[in-house]
Image 1 (tube, rainbow, N blue to C red):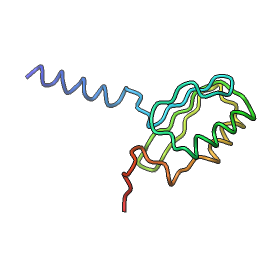
Image 2: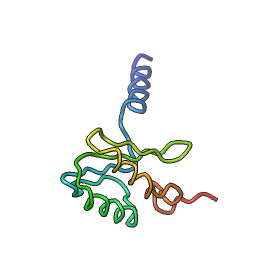
Image 3: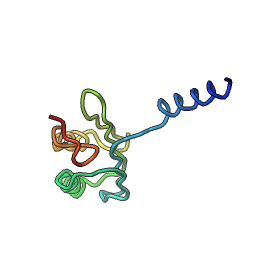
Image 4: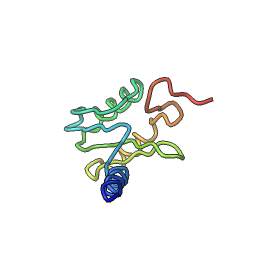
Length: 103
């Protein structure tokens, strides 16, 4: 009985504590260094264009929530760049899995 409670506690801890973004993009000097997750081609093109104009270092992550997608930026990303990325973010067309459209 104790092992069931222990396993349940580990599963609950994993669901709450583990960082699970849909998309994680790392930048260094205005270039994309690392991408983890689905990065839509049009959004990628727009973000690369922004990074070419204003080179920056940092990370941004996209989380899926019940109300929609949420963008989270590291402190190294300037506020003006954050706003430009938010402006080009495809809220309606962004999906975590291709083909998971809802009716």
